[in-house]
Length: 141
Image (tube, rainbow, N blue to C red):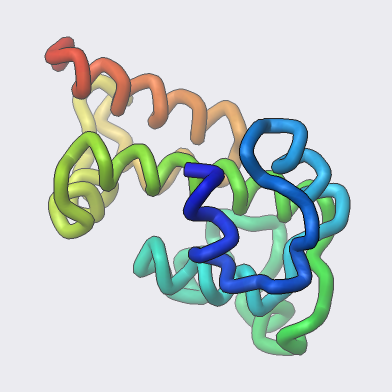
């Protein structure tokens, strides 16, 4: 996932390697820009309205941002975790559309909660990643 990260973010200002978690930590500390957030929305097919439910920012706040405005570290971390989740989901499900549908359906293994509803915390993202791992290995609830 980290190899394609620069490509997804389309950010030539990232002048360091993103080949491991340390690179992602460095990037999150630097802070993603609003332009990066828009690239993530494009990659995940989430809307501003969707992301406002996930991030600790309102839809109105997001609409006021300029493309080069740097996001807080905690928001950057959450966006990078979401990017990792979607990349993994696309890989395991073999189709972006199949994964997106799965994210929107209540999931028995997640107490009948839609996986998308869990993306507002890093613990929720990890829970969804764990479920994707179980699906990958044929362990379905």
